[in-house]
Image (cartoon, rainbow, N blue to C red; front, side, top):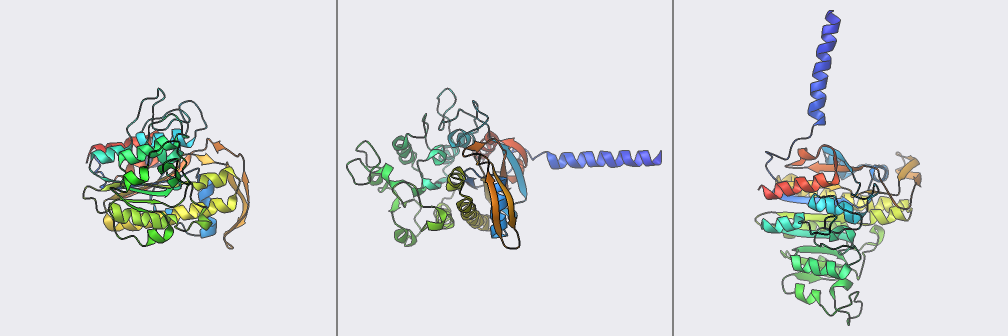
Length: 368
């Protein structure tokens, strides 16, 4: 009888303890962060991170103590794409495959950068693709297709994002200029140069002072892969934080590691690992800032998993993945990891869907 009572007591304690662990903190009654840095590893799943850890040995991601998983399905498909998935991250609303910042009915959805503007915060957008690509577009535009690049560039200019870095200058210059990718005469670079400091080369980037508003478009379209990228993501992230830290009301910065997805689509395991490590180095810079600042929430998420990537052989001792498999050339429905650090991070623990991230971030922006 004593044993039964003892076991019952232990089970009750374990049940209560497991509930405490399993139930993430609510976003309610949480002091919102002054600054938010949202990293998106496009296409990055657990397998991708595992491979990067084998080859780098220690990742900056290991510094996070709040972890979660995100389900990724769109309204109309179990297998999502970047526009639908990132719209959920940016607006807190699940939508259709292909939709950029709009509801399934096509109505515009207010996103986190727009909410940040309302609060007088600085805003930043960085991508290793062109800045009008499917993922960054969801933080600025409200269009029916990711291929409306000129319209997305217009939205970037009209929203007056304070810091813009990546590729894609071809979408910002009029059609009669060499290298233009537009079909009209609008000159967005001239418009933006009235309010932003503008650089177009790595040399100009590294010669920058400390502007509050900055545009660095370093390629006509997409940036080169990580191994050839003249300005790595960590440098862009550090410069963006330096610029946005000058805003008294704080800032919201989005940083996308775009080409993890591309390497996965092409079955390129070597580039995949390089791209994850490039993103991880940038995450390290953000964590360094956040630990000093003590008012910054850092989130690292993925929009979906790409490739069904699995490690089959390798060596931790030799820091090498020697065999891996890609189950598909497309996306999978696997849940993706989430990492959170800083004020408000506890709300993200556990299993959620992508829209929960957007909903929680918006709640922080609405309740300063």
